[in-house]
Amino acid sequence: MLIPASYQPLPDVSTCHNESLVFGGVIAQCANSSAMITHVKCRARAHYPIMHTTYINATAPTIGVVGADLLGSVGSFKRDKGYTESNSFFYASSPLSEYLGIDLKVNATLYDSAEPKVTLVLKRESTGATIDHGIEFNHIDLNVQAINQQSQSSRASTLYDISASAPTNTSPDKPRPLYVPSVDRGEVLYISATTTACILRSITIYDLYDPEVSA
Image (cartoon, rainbow, N blue to C red; front, side, top):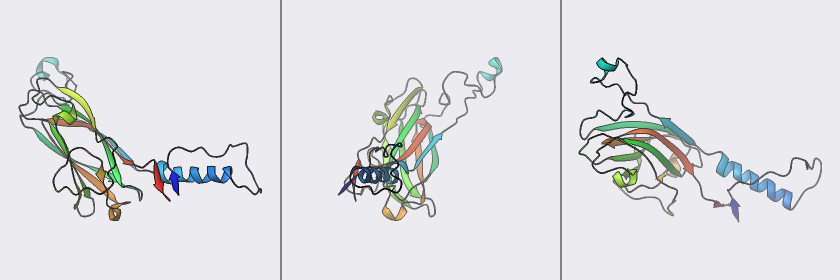
């Protein structure tokens, strides 16, 4: 049979059925609610806001403000051309974690001649071994210009399309949910993120699930 994993309410609180034999609809409601708890509610999620300095030497002597967002550029105003940055984001997966969705907020670097891109690779925390060779967001996926003429803020997502089979790529693929092999589910993982000509403002990692799963 199929177990619905979408939201299912518990039986009405006014009908407790204490010391009563129940069957039919009440049993179905309890079963559906239990399925919701195990397949939807008890899922893993992580959110990381990422801070960047906004201090600019050129304006500090004039304005006299240290650490302020002086030009509204949220940390992306003064970067070298082709600027790259690497970060690791830990994720405590659950035993049900199979596919991970990713939401990003990025700022493209001002006046850069390089194409903005973000590469994400999923690794095992205990050994550092790669378990999914990952994905790469190009400037189109990130919704920013290829060659920036202004500091741009944008959002991007892997969306929610779950593949019927595990990915087999050995280099970063186009954006898709990251895959957690069965042996790594319930373990602490991390996503290695590398950005070029842009910086991450935040990243959200979360479990995806099928609306219906086999019993």
